[in-house]
Length: 169
Image 1 (cartoon, helix red, strand yellow):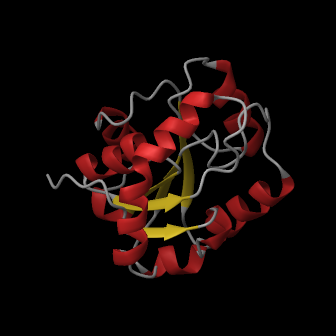
Image 2: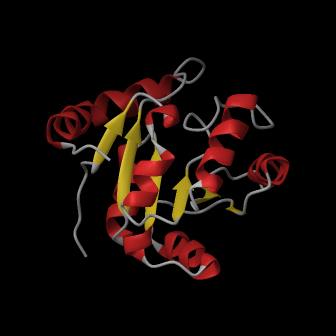
């Protein structure tokens, strides 16, 4: 499988992802990182904009599926249940196993699947290893953890390269 640290597409946030464009590309399953992609760390339930975006995906025949590395099982479970979407917590990204498990569970192939996330070394690398379309967004908020600043600094060259090479949805 191809191994890439650059995403197929890049945008500021999930709201830059057009559900109709995903559907036109044949995407039926959108895997999504939770923390700093859908909502900031610590927000326990979906916001109204996330709910509206999820409904827009569904209207286009695209299922949102939360794929979170969060080690606290109640975090992705509470969020996903409130949003009414399937999830896998403690996913072990960038290992591709949870990607394949989600696709199998939803009856989708890698060609019908995309991942959206804010981290190169988990979301984008994992999606690349699983052979799915990769969508990179900016982290919602870095504050509160010095390790996040370091991680995003290391990711910077790959983010810049993605922005230069990325194709529109």
